[in-house]
Length: 357
Image 1 (cartoon, rainbow, N blue to C red):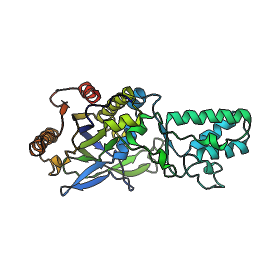
Image 2: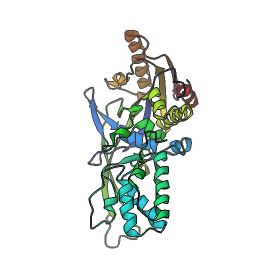
Image 3: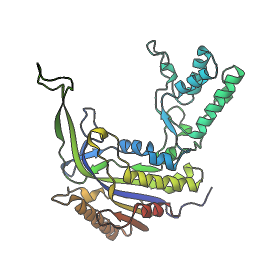
């Protein structure tokens, strides 16, 4: 294995201001919220954030060839590949079900959906190394005209070759030996101030309705939204990331750099066509060290009030960081920050900092 990083933990503290948006909805279609410090705050779940980052063009560009696929429908893809290679429909279905079953419990057959039994019950994250093994097996069994042998179904790998699996982890309920512990912990993004969810009543006009008989709108509806400055906290165990990538330090560094860029520049996709609520982080603080990590969310336990919320949030975060250092001793060995409000620092500075040994 490559030499370990000098500092075990990397922590990122971001402040990002989103205009009116509905980035992450609950079961009723409303923006997600949480109570903190006695006041209502807008919230974006960590699942929503990670999904946006993992599937972004930034990740794809930086980590091409080292990303996995999370799906229930791996068996359907295998079935289609077998059919394309000339395997009969019956054999393709049987063989695909056997291969897909390695990654999870198959769903029950459904007469209304003939390929349902090729899906698995739980989403499974499949790495590129495992995908290569699947493709190799599909070619082998289609060429020889017989299904997979038991020993050929050892397709799961301790090392998946996937940076996103190494970073965000993987859980396989039926094959726990191949679970991967996430190297990154991502907190739910929370507004630093009191928030209110508002409603937008809208109408849509029928272009062909000239109003001769009906002057009404073609459609009536409403959507809910909110605007906020969000605090985002990410903690990465750099040693665990390196371990998950089997010592590939170059890939680990590219993964860290891509994560920083995504966290600062990539927004969740919810209702983007309606609100165009794309935003970059206005402030970022990165910390490296070996001490037990700690969030700085307590900086916003008392909701920021008044005007100039973003500048006040930056000030509150730094004041709390300094007080933590006074009480506990230095909570980080080194720090790097950027501030778009003052034009200090840069994203590249942060990226260089997080990838240093």
